[in-house]
Length: 431
Image (cartoon, rainbow, N blue to C red; front, side, top):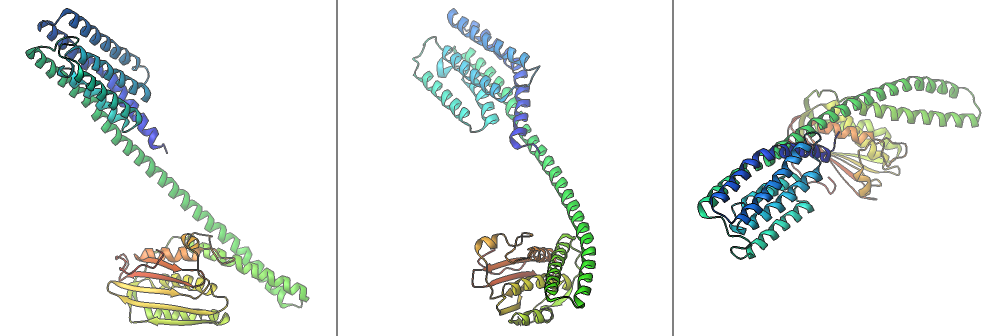
């Protein structure tokens, strides 16, 4: 994907090249008009010669650039230098035709305006602005008639009108061209971004599909290995061999847990199958599933639920809560209390999973839900990611509050129906 600076630079070069190629055709009629007006106004011959030669030299410079940049596009530094030279030459022309009263003063807007549009608030443009303002200040201190008098009224009006016309055409070519170029830059970057996102999405889907296939292929021989080890363990191995087999079985179980967690996370979320859910019954069923594991580690299970009810997918919601509750049990190896809460809200319900475990630091909370980043030895970190995805699929929000030594509270704010707005509630300390 091209960077913004590269796209912007290419657009400025294209517009700048077109501007420099067209500039002599715009300036030449105005130059001829100015010289003719000075001749008919009876200006001093020295003034006419000096101004005419200066205008002719500037026009030759413009023609040289137009020819030069027909073969190659102008670089940004070349365009910037050309505009600075033009502004300096116009200041000298103003000095020769009446100072601030010169009908050529308005022409300064063309190079300055195009430079501002092309290069923004850079140091070069700041220097250009300071230089032009300084030049105008110098012109204001010139005494009347120095070095030559101002052009008389009727001819000065015609010259001013011609200068305004030339300025407007040059600004139209430069500024509107740059405006359109920036719009094209945005469109080009947008297309590049969309293409990159599409490619990343395809790559992610391919990686997920490949990972799922690999996980399935690993799980099949792993199941066979586990079965053989279990058969050997049923025999009469020595105490030493039995310990070794127990280690093998524990490691196989750990690999199986990791594969199952990965498959649950990697598979696309199924379409929801909405149904009315009595959250109290859902939590009591969940407590029954966890009862044996909780008793083994001395964890007390509590359910605090009112008559809260929502419409959602009971299977997916129970799967999310089971992952969160399993994490809570793992955080309390020495016992404690696991509390499951369901409370009715005006526009949905609040579910909570509270534990009295070891808790988490702010740094750990910041990485919570990142796959394979976990505080539990042998964990995968996929359970929280899966739960968050299920809650988001319902249109809800999942919030965490935790502190080391003070346990963890996970709050699920669920809308009344899938796709509805998540209910408002006071956020925990960590959002």
